[in-house]
Length: 507
Image (cartoon, rainbow, N blue to C red; front, side):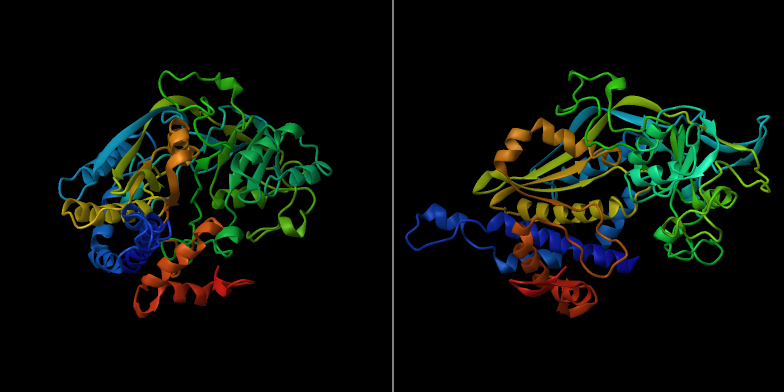
């Protein structure tokens, strides 16, 4: 835990240093320039960065993370509202808060399972008797995983329905996968089981429908995420960070960003909404995620021809196409796979929490720092590790501002976005509402939703324009546990590439 917190501090320090440099470097100074030009072109005070780094407290980040992950906080739930109030309280603190903090609400279209009618995946025989039932929820390993607010695995925006048909294996559900499978198997009326990867979540069902597939299952193959490890007796979580057999990746099965009913418009209550039936980019047929322990039970029993080598996964069995359906000698022989999906769409109020430190010279120029707040369950890594760091950055900067020790040249806007997991909704709606202002005034946007991700070095993606600023910031921050080594040197040691202009640089 301490190591993760230290790495979180490292990531936060680098990101904040990048922000400070972006907020201060600008117009080149010259001896003949008027006083106001010299003021706005003054380089950042190196002492400021040192003072900032000395004030960052890793125990505060740890406590932030503990508070943010106390309960599941899927978008618009009571747990989500609890995090909204926590963010507002911190950003409105009279001693360490921001100049101003507020809540921006949007009325958005989300998708939820029916708690009274959980989604089910079963194998049934010709008379309808159930031969096998997939787990409705994951196996709990700790008490917090037993929280009744832990949402059952489901595919957000999957339509409700009860398709039943012979099972086929469609690899990753890419267009080429269905095309190849259809040359061997008649896919009409079948249920396809697919692996995550290769195609977007929604695409696995969108690609299937034209071939007559009536339902889709999706799972995480242990070869793709676990290095082939499958046993929770001594290999997967809780013995390592590998996904346990019953673990299921939840997600938005939606190909678009923002509220689906108000494209290009901010989703306020009085905004025009398109009819639900006109939504595009979501599955046209029911789809449901399952754990790899249940996927293994199904795939090992499939009949038909052997699938190609690049379709084989981590299970200790041959991956067959399906006859369609199961092997003649299987206990599931002549059985069908049935999906009972009870998902529903609902309009809900979702909140962004916004805060600002106003600039002293160019208050109408913005450096934005954002991260989403909602998670499918507790969200310890994504997004709460990033939010924990953001809260510590704002605590340190807020106190410096309140004490009159510092104020940025440009305004810094902080955004805690809501309903990101459903399709970047909070940030997209904010951008749609303030698009003109943001296009004219925003200098840079920094996004950190994962501050710690199982790696002892830095990972950054940015536009080329920001490269030098990022490298400069990385050179100013010490790597955790390596007092004589900068983040930059540690980064270039473990991940690098050769640039024609600059030689060896971090990757």
